Image 1 (cartoon, rainbow, N blue to C red):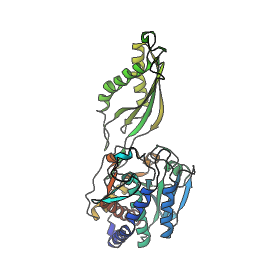
Image 2 (cartoon, one colour):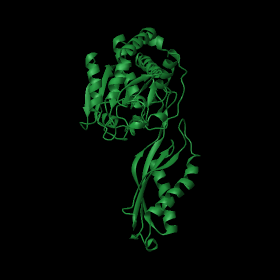
Image 3 (cartoon, one colour):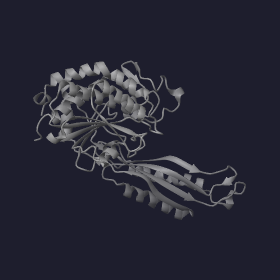
Image 4 (cartoon, rainbow, N blue to C red):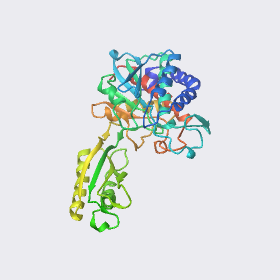
Length: 404
């Protein structure tokens, strides 16, 4: 399957160039200026920015929200009655800007310098959103014949691993994809697999005493510290040997600790949260049992009480790297002069909502995920341009002919 055989690749690619030249910088400016930090994850300003742009281009859309602060925008092209549905997905919420003094530029103003655009969310994931909007407009302008429907979804509630964004659209049947392209900072590499996640909350119980006589109590903070170290030193190396396709190894990190009320008191309780990343083939239930077993042995040996519970769980997935969607994206990459490369995902995307229902999945978009949750976030403008070209051309190829 080649792009040229399905639709005039040259015409469509030229249209994408025109749209990107006219709109990419403007869209990035509008999106980065829209504060959508999580918490609280309010995406109303970002959705209004997209809606205003779509209105100006006379493109129809709908806004769907389970929570008025977390709206999701949907753009449709083509006709679902004539074929399969391809869903493009990008999230509009960001993490917090953090220490403003660490930023060399205003995090809420798109700053273009040295071929890059700087700003909060530039890579994760507003450049993907802008590229998808440009690609959709190019397909509409070029009147690409789609036998099926392209559904562009710009969503909220992704950074918190929530379900009121893409999850809500899937649950309510607003989106029923056969193909799902998750926009994100992959460096325009293809992602077919993602690790899962378990947040295990470990609660340690000791006994209180005056801080002047610590031997009369059981210090839950100290016992928790020993237990955390044991988890990291005992389980950590074993996890590093567990590997899956196109993902980093399994891992464990202690990210939150809560304990103690006063320096002059032996704390009777302490809790901490373990972030456990799971490779395909592992399950949250098995990971929880593994942590609970180690904690239970340690507690019995040292004489304190411990409980382990799951605070959040996401299944890992491994999609088919030779799917029709993957081949269409690879063909489009070659058409625009990119060598199609397979990347390695460190994050979790909204593809998790469709990963176990027979849906073909590819993660693809501009930017570097490892550098996206920190000050001076940026993305190469050329990557965003190339992403828009690949998106438009692959959609035309995938939906432009009867499925084999």
